[in-house]
Image (cartoon, rainbow, N blue to C red; front, side, top):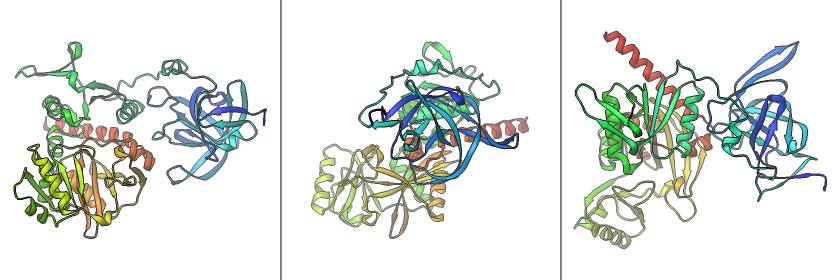
Length: 463
């Protein structure tokens, strides 16, 4: 027992046999098999033996530093992932170095892009060598991002790739980092631009978009607007300027504007024959009782029209409580939505991620105890779910009705069938990638590739 080293829940290790001088791992004794992030996995024969080649992007959120690896195949096994999915994986042997100690381990190869660590160190690799102190981290030394990058050289930028601008507010958000990583990994030049630091030149002859310091951004093939609600007006104006320059926007300004107007978006869905919960709309109503009766009485949901991520949303369980909430909102002179409460949903809803008219992923969100809103930002949980054909059709039609290339479509299962709640034009990636294990950021970049290619062909046909 005393001979075993003690590791924290996360550590920097190396796999010298694979040419990986440093990689951050999640140390997890609850997992049996170790797993390494690998893509482009290709089996081949060498001297009559089975080998496999694969690429490793060893640093999280970095799509430019890549190591090409080859190793003999030890086995091919069905392994259950942390999301519950069963996957057939190649297993290889390699040397693990932790601190001053080294030993041979088996590691499975899988795409871990949606996970927080490029490698998972399971208990089979630790047996006889290591114990885990789950309250500690980096007991063998911390490594700053800049120092880790020095171990690897950047790959040459693909000059044939697209120039893509990511328009957002926070470069540190998981979704923004994943999109940048995916763009780089697919050989494109992708840059983050803070929306508030962009400004526009309106001119008939030389319209322009400028960035801080006077840089002109007219030469991009595409932009990805990820606009926070408080920046909707300015962000859409900026996106519209790029569109006027012939730059493709993955979600155009008009569609984003429609999706951000809660009332108009619901009216659009209804006008396209899509079902929503019964909803009332009013501005500080005098006829409170009639408004409550309109949606079937209590319990009911009261929403501020400007609320986001579950804020400004109240469940009124009785008629008296509904009257109190509505009257409280009256004092704000606010526009409110009153909506029927779907009790049979039991605090659960569905988030379908739609890209280019296809549902690429879906998860079920469940509210935490004592909460009715199934929102991950409010402590809810997400899990992979199989949706019905009707739910898939509803999600696709909702994104189409809004005019969105990329959409997070929220719906609820009711006794009447699936009902649409909301269509989000800047859906987050962390929850759904973590729940489903799918690489949605790459799907978004591929959608840009397809749409830019179509625009290029169309443009040349017109000529």
